[in-house]
Amino acid sequence: MGSTAPADTVRIAVTQHEPVWLDLQGTVNKTCTIIKDAADAGAKLVAFPECWIPGYPCWISSRPVDFDLSVKYVQSSLRVDSAEMKTICAAAAEHQINVSLGFSEREGESVYIAQALINETGEIKMTRRKMKPTHMERTIFGDASGECLAKVIDLPDVGKVGGLSCWEHIQPLLKYYTFSQGEQIHVAAWPPLEPFVEGSPGFYSMSAEGCRAQSQAYAIESQSFVLHCTGVLTEGGIELMKTAGGPIMGSPNVGSSAVIAPDGRILSASETANEQLVIADLDLKLVTKAKTFADASGHYSRPDMLWLGADERVKTVVRVDV
Image (cartoon, rainbow, N blue to C red; front, side):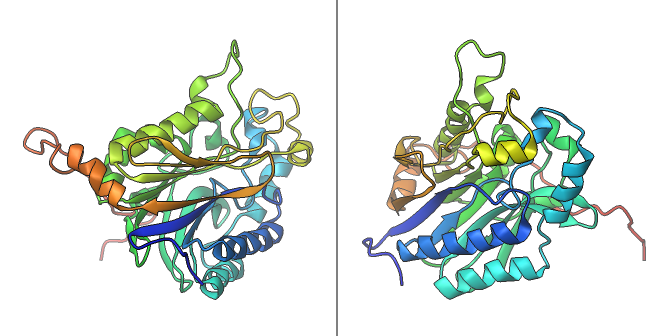
């Protein structure tokens, strides 16, 4: 199994699907089906959106406190060391495909917005947590410590792959830390996003168009391919989470996933309102081509004047001096 694309290219798949809302096992099962579909299409990497498992907690934009849904959300979230994660890893190995997974990570009774990178043999090569949940997300999710500074991973036959979640793409220092590691393919994981409505009191930067612009800016800054991965929200999810009429995620949306070139152009995007995989063949030579013009962490940098410091240590709540 594998791509028929010519040498120096890698075929990838970006998901645009709806999770089985607040259903851990149901969404794990759907994840494995999508992994198979992506591999059957010849992809060597498939990307899932922010909090794909068990779905993004859409109600937090309408009402910050909902104890029933919050309890269900924690109980439906995915532990890294769990049978459900092992099932996903086994699917990656069976179909010989790398997987970038967005999920709500459960540790004890707390949850964190997380990403994992699983290689084609089913080994978890990287896990990271979102540095700081955005605004209303803080009613559900905790902050990361050094876990947010996960390394970019060099995957054989794919390239150097990294990822960030949602509005981490407006964090200049975190972005620089990530793309300074020589990223060639970046997974930008987003929740369901609604089109901007002119005259709306909301932010353009939170809309489908505004968030895609953030991913395009990241591609230009990093000179990497960006897999812009968004979720889908239908009436079923709205009814379950009671968000109808809410200012954010209160109406259905069909997703806006896309593949973005190192110069910021859209290479491939969803074509219909149906659930689908956005497939693209990435010519990795375009990364080199873009960097010959401006490499922000290479020849176009000035470390004699400006530099970034990073503390990758994880600070636990109990630290015992020995």
